[in-house]
Amino acid sequence: MKTSLKVLGWLVYLIVLQCLMSCDSHSDNQEKKAVMNSDVVALQRFIKLPADVDSCEWQTGEFAPGGDWWLAATLKVKTEELSKFLLEPPNKELVEIPSTLQFDASFAELKSLPSAGIAGSNSISFIVDVYPVTPYESSPLLNGKVIKLSDHTVFILLWTL
Picture (cartoon, rainbow, N blue to C red):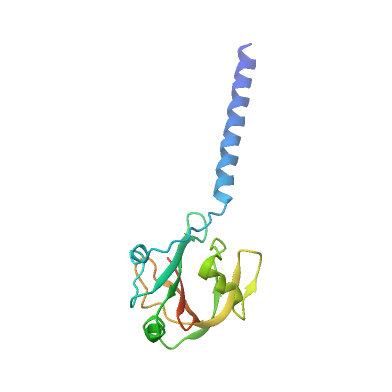
């Protein structure tokens, strides 16, 4: 009787352990969707802004669980202030958008760029003029891409590492 109780105890232990492990791996594999934010003051806690913006939308997310994190923003600016946001010269580069970025509101413009290649519903990349991120850098967000979406809209994608 003691032996069968021990075996039953081990079986229950192994089943519970396997359930816990599968629950953990399932939650790690789920992609967390980015949340849209429009608070300029909160955005300035993460990045520098070279001049006043009329409005902004931004979101953050992870490239991979436990890895780098990113911040993407669209800034509405006055046309006459655009040169403060886009430092010359631009270079033609590949821009890859994180898969967890939400293409809502002003971010929807990214899908309509002429060179946009859509790989699945949440992943796009394109080749476009990319401007230096120098005006926006703020540790730890020191890497990224800046593009001009229109005469009054700038898109910024910054990441760590």
